[in-house]
Length: 83
Image 1 (tube, helix red, strand yellow):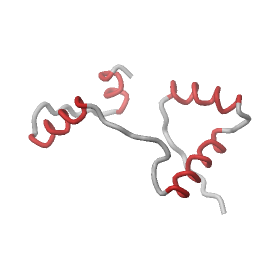
Image 2 (image 1 turned 90 degrees about the vertical axis):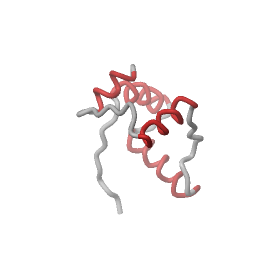
Image 3 (image 1 turned 60 degrees about the vertical axis):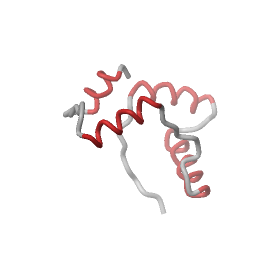
């Protein structure tokens, strides 16, 4: 049985990834299914996710309630972060 879903993705990453998927003969759905299958098989994200000292510092600031910014939309956060 298949499950239909929708997901919002960053357009820049989508366009770049689609070029690679097409070169490999994969559709977006194929690529997502490969990712999900790998997660299910390995019971983890199939690549390393790390953090920087800056991220650690910011988490500590959040825990202390300091320097908190709230964004109405993800696009605002991405723009502020330069993404």
